[in-house]
Length: 429
Image 1 (cartoon, one colour):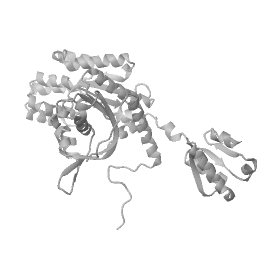
Image 2 (image 1 turned 180 degrees about the horizontal axis):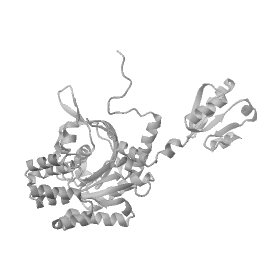
Image 3 (image 1 turned 180 degrees about the vertical axis):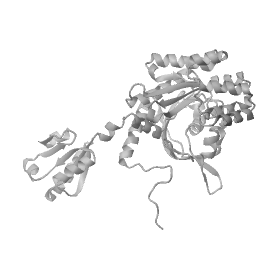
Image 4 (image 1 turned 30 degrees about the horizontal axis):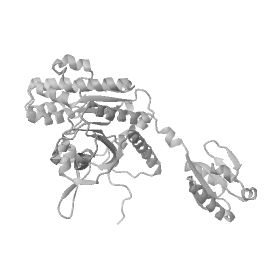
């Protein structure tokens, strides 16, 4: 039987050129988190299925879970997200660990969803979280890291916007329109799907949880709001809510820090995960060719309760590799990365008599930390230069009879076209 050589649907092979892009993204993530004092961790690839069924919502905790049945008949899930896993980990050590706890991870996940632009079944995410800090200072730091990550890619002004909201504001809205407490979670799920469902579907779902026509109209008006002034004009009863006060404080602080042009209050930012219970936010690409949510995060103080422990104050964020890549492509921010030549050396074998000398030179340069690829077979200088150019090497070292006689090396810089004969001491520098 002939096997297919393509990857499983919704996954991708990363050949070196693609891997270079992902590594660039991952390096930015790791650099920013490390500079803020976060420590790196990793959780198992599989978890008990109940971990995600408890609070991840009807999609991630249900139809999008990819599961495995082990030999003992236990059903386990391939992790679709990190938040429940890291909360599980922290709940083990929380009482005995110095707080706040700042953790980050870069890991792969799987979801059984239909592959489409920006969404694969297998994907990678950065997850960074603070545990053990209740005030909005922790929220502010999570937002600042999100902004610093985006700005590290050097995007043009106006290329993205971070939209802020607060779950307590939404809770107060639902209470004000007489949505029962036991229906709030389902109401929020419906609101999160507002742009995906038809109006009749939305009305039908809201009616099923006890919403009357006035409540349905109020929710509709709320979901259409885009400004703070509009919210206060339409819903003056929400003016003094904790959620609105927190959002205002965060916007004022971020503006003072120089991020004012990149942030905005947006009442209809919901975040569909059931565990969010405080500040929530999403970062959007503003490019007309890629108008979409890139990533988001928020506060989830109550998630730890599923492990029988007290509520652990927690707030975090999870950018994904695929949407970040689309953002970089939409603004041409990968062009320089893809065209630049790396500081690697190619040492071709252009004369078989000097094979040993080439090998010794390569060994010596590698011991000094340089990246050197050796030619494995005889090749003409012209073809060697062409090969190095296609492989995006910056330097080619030529070692032939003339170089041996003069005890020098010919160094060609493919990024500038400059070629010169140099001594070994110069090659070391």
